[in-house]
Amino acid sequence: MINYPKGLSRTRPPQKESKKNARAFVSATESTHQSKKERALRLSKKQVQNLVEFGKRGMNFESEINETNAYYLAHHIAVIHKKPTPIQIVKVDYPKRSKAKITEAYFRQASTTDYSGVWQGKYIDFEAKETQQKTVFPLKNFHEHQIVHMERVIEQKGIAFVLLHFASIEETYLLPSINLIKFYYEKHGLKSIPIQYIREFGFEIPTQQIPRIPYLDILKKLCEVNEN
Amino acid sequence: MINYPKGLSRTRPPQKESKKNARAFVSATESTHQSKKERALRLSKKQVQNLVEFGKRGMNFESEINETNAYYLAHHIAVIHKKPTPIQIVKVDYPKRSKAKITEAYFRQASTTDYSGVWQGKYIDFEAKETQQKTVFPLKNFHEHQIVHMERVIEQKGIAFVLLHFASIEETYLLPSINLIKFYYEKHGLKSIPIQYIREFGFEIPTQQIPRIPYLDILKKLCEVNEN
Image 1 (cartoon, chains in turn blue, yellow):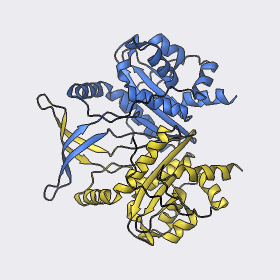
Image 2 (cartoon, rainbow over the protein chains, first blue to last red):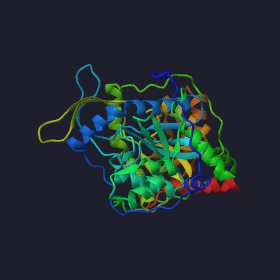
Image 3 (spheres, chains in turn blue, yellow):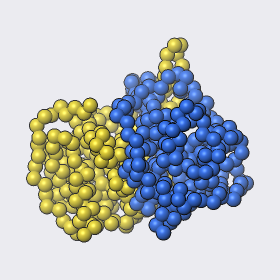
């Protein structure tokens, strides 16, 4: 059922994890809330083209995440799904002898992150993005609605993070959302997060054959650290 | 920001809640898993028409749930969102000076429930449905994918339930998914759940002005019962 097109394991030694950092992540409840109204807006032509282009670039990483989630689901480890893309439907036709056909619709901007679900009673919420950059991760990958959503999830004691994939150097990191949020507000002038910051506050995920991106292994360790 | 078109409060005395039932709900981990492949299928014309018709009938209840969730979000009580309807996009046009326009797309059957989110660290997952029937709730409101999804959520110790609204008699119930699942498998010959069953295993939600359908009040009580 699950295909792993790239048979080679590109396992790398995981970085040492800071206990302090782990505690801050799992128990993080601090949050900056904005009264700005959350609205679902139609995406512009340029935004959709970026989305489509990014989608093409991101296919491998996204499908690896989806395969990992399928593995977790099939093995009763966690129930984590990608949310459907929000679409504004304007017109639906019912052609003869055929299925209902949407003939006019528009993309809307997501007000939350892409992935959410449950793992051992805990609420899991994340966004997965990749870049071709080698030393920085562009902040344009995250829009303000998503940052605000992550803050809300942390406030409700959900586990919020981002999975960042550096395609060129084949490194994948789990960065707790609290660290992304801090960077986003404190360094708003900067257009990218330096990889040093991600290495300092994030956790490298050693990619393997099955499942491809075992991000729950990182969360498991973090929860153990937090409980001790 | 939130409009409550029906100004009248139609509060009803809540039913007595069974402690045993509450414990069974919150700590429920039993589950029946099916190996049947989970596939996202295009909906038939009839299914979509039912969906659209049901959507019209269900507008009030659904918008009341959405308003309740907006209230919970605005008041930092919980972060619970309705998932977008899954759509299969076939063709996208970029008309001159205009926004990206989807010109061919189809409805897909949802593989999960409609609502999910986080409340005080707990994963919340539910489906909201209404009927014009007075004594029974038609089972056709729930398809097998959703039943399987609810089982998986319970297995992962998420809080899974359905909100059932009897529009004619103005009664709304929170029925733990475990009780829906049991009925679904044990009484598969039956096309509807008798209201007596819902009253026995579910919890009536007294609707009020703000928020409209305070379902978290029920969960709060159930969690207190479970912790004592």
